[in-house]
Every structure is written in C-alpha cells, then in structure tokens.
Image (tube, rainbow, N blue to C red):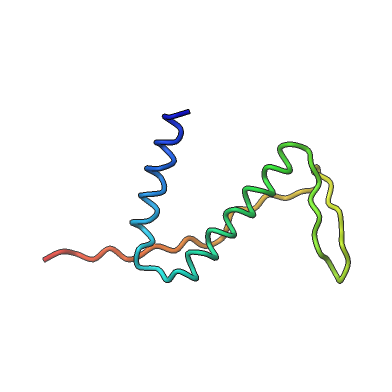
Length: 83
C-alpha cells in the first residue's frame, strides 16, 4: 500500500509541474472531467447503473450500456528552450 501511495504522489507531482502555467479554473475543470470518467468506468466495471439527465428527464443507464470515454483535452504548458 505504501508503494502505491508513493506512486500516486509522484504522479501528482509530475502533473503539477506540467500544469503549473495553466489557470486554476481550467485545471479544476480537467480534474472534474477526469473524476467523472473514473466514476463512470467504476460503475461499468462493478455492474452498477448510472443515472443521468436526458431531454428533461431522469434516465437510468444499465451498466452494460455505459460507454466509457477518456477526457478529450489535456492541458499542458509549452516547454521553452533555455539559452
């Protein structure tokens, strides 16, 4: 478990370096999209349905009909050449 936590910490540090120049609002939106994608994938994996809002109604989507999508955009800063 400690090794897994260490890997997660290292991954988070790398992401923070990549996104250090990106505005907080954009970083927050990306984090939210990633969390939603992970939650949807988790529901599909465990066989639990998800509930969505579609055409003004609450709709229950069975796990076998869930389509898992990766977040479309990843924001990073441009690396500049050092002189």
